[in-house]
Image (tube, rainbow, N blue to C red):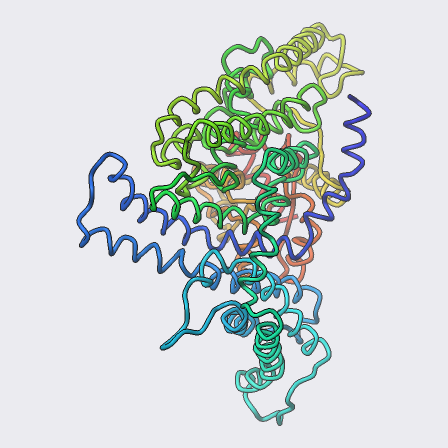
Length: 593
């Protein structure tokens, strides 16, 4: 087991490199930007469809406008995503270009929409067919969104532009600067689409769907879902946010399948597509990646170890809403050999059971997308359209997860009890498992009582250095006096993580500490990627530990704007979220360092 863990950890630099891939990040950021649209459209379809499940048919005057809201939002998802993905990729490219020679991201977004329409949308009499503006056009949207920014890069980086006199205002000159790459991009996709149709007899959007159809089918099988959800857990096990790496590669499948399921169900058929966002939210990652809800419950209510009991009770509410970083870093689960097998295998078991219910028992797969923070049993029932078998499946998954984790939980619990006993007796150190001092044992016992997680640092080299500097700065500075607080200028702190959930825990702790002390500090949370245009609005940006592989990029962006940046270890981060005063001091000390 130790050799296997060492091998996985040795591959961490490769995993981090994959997570930093600008194209995967562009898909992720583009999807995050479109999540409000998807949830908005799903809300209308829930109102329109759920009453019919209970035999209540809404009048046409009511249902038609509801479906219109769905079709006019979800129905143009490819158009929206080609714009957001191309903007994210443009931002990544601009980071490598001189500040005075940047790509106009608004121009890229507009041109990307035009090129998508040229490439994938079929002309009809009087206008355009809407079929490939929605989920069917997502693969075409990826092709366009990856290509257009690189066409712009070719011309902008070489300063190939229409030269105008210096007297011409900048905003007018920018219009002409965009004209050449704009014209080339549009011409390439217009001509390319015409040639492609002549050679194949079909639009590119139809062709690429057919090309990837075997992949969609394979991904939806038992082996496919095992690879996808096993990989997510594997990445998280080494401290890298797994969904940020895996989900961009399958986002098109997720969205296409949920749309197909809804159409099949609306036509009276059996919705059988397994791979969807709700499958990830409410089946595979029940309680968060690794399906950790039942493990957290066991820690909270039946653990004999003080550490596990304190961490479990502090984490049970966040984990209920699928925010499981406190238990991942607090137990810890990350890089913990004892918990390796259940962490990897439990999500796979959950999805296989779900697939069995759908394929063999006639249960409908997911029809609706709900917020990922919806408690999993509730999300499972509502997302499948209140399928009768969902009321059986939801508790069954909880039982299976408990059975999967229990033997390993017991082994780990016994280990920690033995360690805590040795610490209390002064036989070993609370800082590690080999040396000890009585003072360390006392501090560790106090930390356990306060619910502060214990976890060695797991960030990469750059993140580890940053975390060390952060800890030194936080411990060296004194708490500000009331007089200092009165004279303090307003400070703004941004906390980033993959989705904005884990980061909100620290952001709220900082804000709460500021309110308690009466100092003018505001703190908010965002998903990584949403901050790109807002960096200069903040005095400090803190990166959550699971996104530590992005710290070099964040630091570069922040340095260009004269903004402080930092990251932390898992142990430190969880501890700060539980102590508002320490969280505030942590932020203030970094700002004035």
